[in-house]
Length: 316
Image (cartoon, rainbow, N blue to C red; front, side):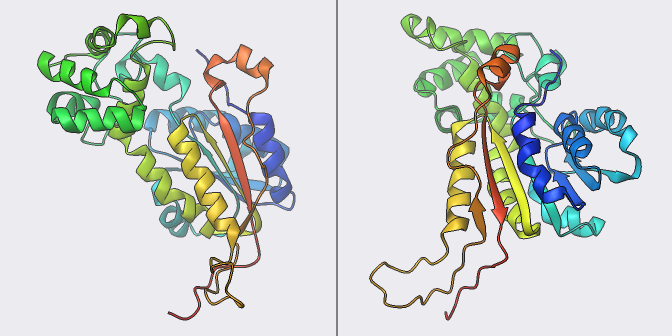
């Protein structure tokens, strides 16, 4: 399936006002550059720093972004390294940061990457092929208890213990098709009839674990706010409830300011709000986009704008 940027229109509408006078826009999850092309086309005075840990994605993005010439700088790295990468490039502060989380269509559709339960491939799932640990390590080397915790927490799978037990008993598991069949057999037949493919949640959990995506996001969000100029904006598109809750919580915390108890006569914490939330409820893809691109159905977009104030913690 061709990769189509999810919620591209909403992303551009939210980022463009911060880029009217130029400045740097960071696509921290560049992928195939769909969002980056849309933003640069709308903001002709802006420049881009595109970050991705997948070398294949960077190679394809370079071609897609070639018409923008020296407005584009691409770097291979993790978005948890956002602040240090920008410092190395001398590109901070910036006017916009985008996170389009999850896995791209080209990654899913390549059986050799091992992301999909719909085609046979190796148990890989690494977004960066150079990283040492793969899904094979998680599936065949984690203890049954650790495997169940990963599947239960990151996949929000209620049959995590049954699935983990089935996997351990069948070791070594040799590929994605074998794993998907094991998961299907471990889930009660009545449950398998609803809710999509029975392996979906477990594959999602394994991918998140292999790439440490929740930890990466937790580290990257405060950095994104740190590197923004006043008036700069951060947009995050998530496809998983854990990611969305993490984004929502960070934005809410950064928008609160004073954390003193309500009955304190004066503020003693010294904390100031660093952002204002731009959308009260997450933006969802319109029905037409979901029909055209079913993989967009779970997407949620949240956005915030950096305020001129910072955060001071007052007396210790």
